[in-house]
Length: 372
Image 1: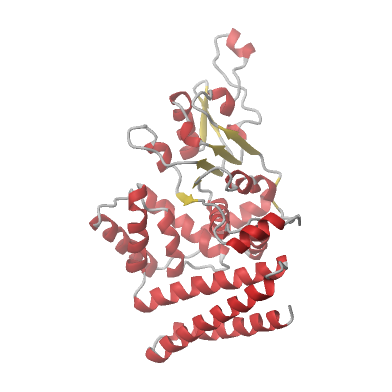
Image 2 (image 1 turned 60 degrees about the vertical axis):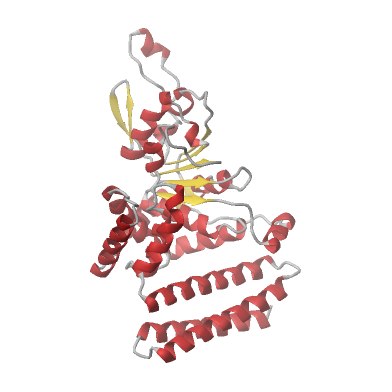
């Protein structure tokens, strides 16, 4: 059933150029019912990509708003009911506002002032909104927040920053070919849709994805290594990260978390921006032994290469044939690396399995390029 999400992922990758990581993050957040933060300059497509949550899931309520330093609670939580106010009841009309949303995108979220912050924190963390002191259960699954910049120490926004389990930097399109293709693109891409019922079923399946003891042990090793480096994510963040790992495995079509899934923790476990690169390095070094690290690197590069080739064939740009030939050569180079490693370590069956899989996919890729 995860193929339904794979098709959505593929079509989103066709629609949004150079946004594979962000798209994976968005779908992972959706499947795990967690919150996602995009940080980057204006004009990088953060709001358009985030709005896909409301477009993908039919029957859902999507809320979107841009905060400024002068924003008032009414903009997110609804206006006060004048009828109730006459009777001394301080109650808001939350219809079609954030407390009733399944998904939301809050642009410039760190502009939230003290009048908004407490209610927003409770809603994000507990999915509860207090209206005149009465708790209202919110259907909220995922909020995507965005900001042009990171928070600074002393702004009082640390708690809000901590509420976002996934954090990604979004930059302008990096590759010149992708940038030119984006400029020329006029083809509308239809994104497959799912119902709320189907989404609930996917989320139940995600919750049932298995995590083996070896993965738990790897996470414990990561935690200790981070602590040794002075990086101390909370136990709550580690616990919540399990849902992210399960969703990532499910999105890849698996019913079990593998070591390769641990790389997403590099977007979860750092606390401040200066810890980001150190966290990535520790996760790579701690979670994988030499062969595992090699397999992880090679698999990631090869999967990205195949995805790029598929997207290139679909877009049929003037430089497509040249790009495909280059991608095929890169794929063959990666295959030779695996073949050499397999010869050096013949007792590691996962290397043989990787070599067999890559050979099969290379043959298919070669056939596709010849017939293009």
